Length: 376
Ligand code: ATP
Image (cartoon, rainbow, N blue to C red; front, side, top):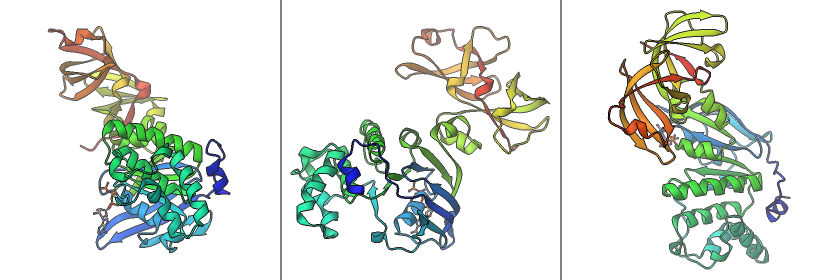
């Protein structure tokens, strides 16, 4: 059934590989707890990114899914079938790594055919399947080339074709674009996203690059110290981070220190840089409770800060640097209480570059703020 879906690559029909369920998964290496009691469900056909800083346990979790590591405790099921102790070659999983690891002495076609030959697929079937896999990654005319005759991006596409040629319902990728330069990486992110949309297979992708995760994923699981700190759609993580850690990791975020001044009905009034902001309760991270006088962290995206003409009702600061970003200009501003902020203004805001325009006033969109408790 899978072959028919792969041969009709323009089809939107998703492959039902079953939900992948990680239940209480822990992995210890001696005294190091690499993965710490993770519960996670990956829906069939979903693109899930495991995102997080170095050492947060992303690769270890992926390796347990692949079968190259055994959990210290917990279980992994696919469509209800327990695969925790199933050998890697029995799992019907494709893998793509950061270093494409193509065989240098084999042509592109031979590289892609390799997993089929290993599985004893009939010779007459191999040619058409290799052709289809290369067509998926738009390299059908490169079959006779050697890997050394390809660019980094093309080599990585061959690696993707080699993983897909066995028609796995699940594809695991570990930093697949890590070795590519920025422009190529961005192109490949779109390629992989489109490929996923066409094939409808389940993809779990490890990355430490938040832009990559935002671009490609249906959902992102943001990890830290072996745990999932938050899981949700890219928009949910961007707009409604549940902690300062998530707010800081996803996108650009400004943090300002403040205090809860008053709590009235559906609003919280906070004192920030000598200015009072009324913030709807809906902007508070779930599970957080605030009391009057409490120190808080106000998280505001650069795009939710707007420059005003006057200081009345605004926060004031000095422009320290102005950075040209193409369509926008990024202003690095230091408020009177010493906080450094990033503010985005349209490129044509030439005034901010002129001498004597060092001081500016701005307001923060209270509906786009997140509040977190602050340790003092
Ligand atoms: P990176 O982005 O740097 O690859 P990661 O989030 O993928 O990091 P892991 O590679 O899963 O993190 O490592 C998680 C923790 O487990 C780290 O502290 C790491 O040093 C440790 N670890 C991983 N593999 C082993 C191993 N084979 N033996 C001992 N410790 C290990």
